[in-house]
Picture 1 (cartoon, rainbow, N blue to C red):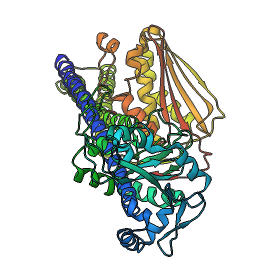
Picture 2: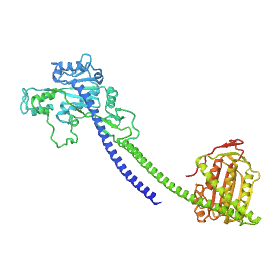
Picture 3: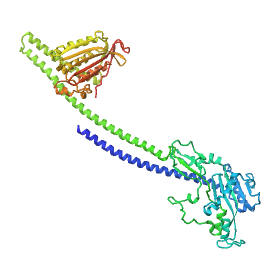
Picture 4: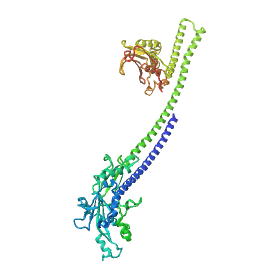
Length: 616
């Protein structure tokens, strides 16, 4: 019909629009989620860096050495800071050693090392790594005045380095220093810092084992466990980026070349405090204000107060990556799952709609067939009843005279009554099957006797149709397990259909033989004719209740469409089956298979209550 197809097309169109909208929404949500996760990760990495920076600055503030301490005049402030700092055992583990290079001391007494017991600096010999760092003179690296007054982080040590300057009192910008006799511009070329003299260098050597096994894991757990996802974190030196000094877990098997977020672990305060969206300084930009070219008070504070920590010639960098390989891969996985769930729901909705429309269509088709069945049954019932009534009236009114006429009328009444009884029986069987109340007494049957009885009952009909009956039954057939009445009804239906639809061929063959099927011995009974045959489009539906093929309807052959359906249900109830083979114009073959009585799973006699289900 037209309306189910139109409605189905409308539903499909609506679901298609929903699918497109769902895809666009999912893509937009995925993009927003990717940006949110990326921003969250960068923020977490920034907090990771700030906490590490805070730990380093705290240690550097404790060991802030000035010229007064080197000269031995005043170490009170340092002693107080060190005493308070050393109360925390973690602080002592963080720093391995502290060294001072006293450039004003005599040769052989310039190398000092912190004595942890007394808190004083005593003479010693610098390790080769410290000497290498001092030789590189990180305070003279490019970076302006901040480089010369700040702590420089060195990843090769690892540790921090800061020069110690002696401030020359009385010096002011543009004048001669007191007692100096030379302008500040000339002294700046010697000392590198106007009005200041480099008198020493402080070196803090970090405990790399403690940093790698204690500090980094704690920072990862604190900042990079986001929404239940612990990111893979690696920290490496800019000198050797191919070999990380720390990894939070096993290396990811499949990753992109670029991590999801990466930044320097130690960075200049000007970079850390840059406003969002602010561009970095370009080579042509004016330099930031130089604290040493301010007033004497500000200059003294810049040289003696705890200074910032900035990267040196080598640095550590921290990189984070999602355990799925990348943020994009994680978002893509979630997006695919969401799309599959969304499209799956739409497909279920489409399938449900299709099944609903199919059920409606089948229900309407079944209702139509039932109406046709009622009309056909009414006609089929009316015809024998009319014949019986007419024959009875003639007999009652004395119209029929003579023994031969009475005998003919009796045979007519008997035939029509049997026809009427057969139709009533089919209707009753169909009703019993629908209500699951049909009962069968399964027992060993002599199938040859049953076949002969059916053929004997239908002999007049076969003869009147002008058909030749060919009988090919193996006399040695085993008994079958079945109900005698049910088996007879199945065969009667097949034989009567062969007479009804195969009369034009003038030939019928009934054969029976042993067969093996479904891992058990069976008996196969075949009824063949050379009639009109059945079209392939009708063949797969002929066992549906109320269904009649187009050729049968065109031939004006009366029937209810229940016979084959009931016959197959009866066969199934007896653990058998009915199969059909046909070719239009050449005839048909129907095969009834029943289990042989020798079945080991069946008793000698068995009474079953089998539901007879009807096809939709």
